[in-house]
Length: 477
Image (cartoon, rainbow, N blue to C red; front, side, top):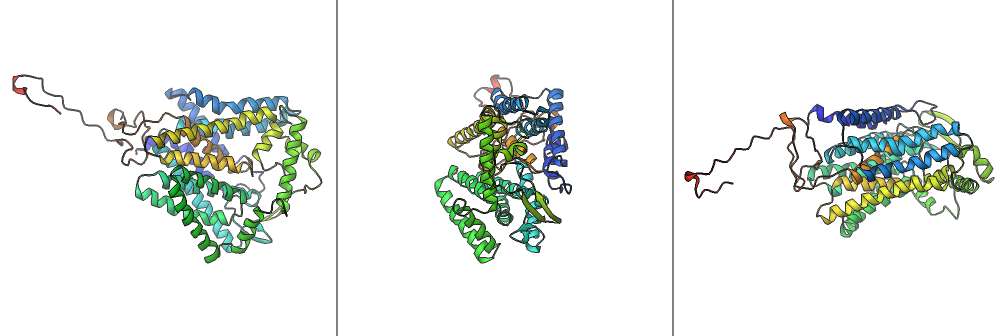
């Protein structure tokens, strides 16, 4: 693959790579170098579209990806403090509109999709390795009085960052392992997925555990019930070996797993605060049912709608930082955050866009399966999207890893809306062996995925001799 063919992927891969850079100490979680790279990504996409007159978004893609703009802008205009809502407008448009649209336009084919997916897995392995080292050496974030919580390079103020990245890597590896026709990529994907289970466990993130389990179970079910049962048994055995045999956080992990079933009977402080903030967000919606209290308005209206059960903040420490009281600025539920700040109109447009995206992605995957093949890119896109929608019930946007959420939505949108070439169709090659114009082939190049011509020039086809007496009776192939 020539350097010129890699050029459109450089902005995408830069965003993924820069997520490994630790955020500045004391930063509020926004305005990182990865966010700056995402702005460059959007600009590069716009320049490429104008200069090369590249294909625009389809009508369906434009409607689905542009639908959140209506709710976001309406909530900002109707806010009691429109100026304070402007940063929220920029953040929402970045995560849910601009970056996903740029990914759809810059990812040209399934091979590009695979490169980005493997880049996410590589980032997950990097963050996971740092997290496991933090757990083993006692240099992670504080958890139950010990500095053992794996947070990667994101620090104790963003304990969900590493868990999110690692979970993305596991889901992407599962999709590649289930859909890739080649043995070597499938083997590498299985190895990577198994390795990433360890940092996910020691992240102690219940929401990431639940979302990963749901996403992987759905992918297995889409590929066949028998395979789902076999893999489920193997995963259960691996979990027993990791926790009971090797003692990977056995006591703390068991306590954390048990706390999931005690969210109503005997909830811990974090669960109590979360339920209280959920109720506060619902109260904001009841006060302003149509347009909400405005973007970035949850902290200002939280105390007016929260009960006395809400604590003043959460304690953070470890991972190279001292003790710090972290204020509770969001309800840790994306759907309730949108409902409270943007009202019913915002929920219908923003969450409705996600549901429409999920429906289009699932329909395309089902159609591909009926055609006889389940492509890896479809499984990865659906798995990542399902993971995100499930995790939104326990978390919301915020922190350095949010820009990766935008890329994930973009990959799902590419699978849902980008024109895909049918299997077996030859790929066109530009004159002189340059990058092909229509590069919508399968990245694997395996059987049944079309012809991979790469950059080698196609030899000229010999013209058949003119029919004459000497050629009578000859069958030209």
